[in-house]
Length: 78
Image (cartoon, rainbow, N blue to C red):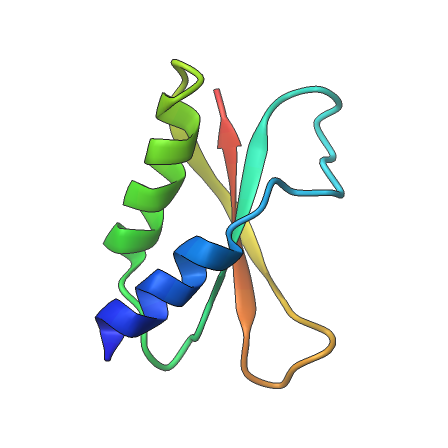
């Protein structure tokens, strides 16, 4: 089940439209707080940032205001 959730998360991973760091690349990954592996989310963020020759750094999380279940983990590429 976790693999399915991760696959869905990978399909939904997007660059953070509300990038509060100006032009610095970032990514926000949706996840189910009841069924997730933080190491998998970090690996996904690292793959995104690694393509830019950068390293992913965890930068917090937010709750999806349109859902009672989904959250987003935010990473900056540094």
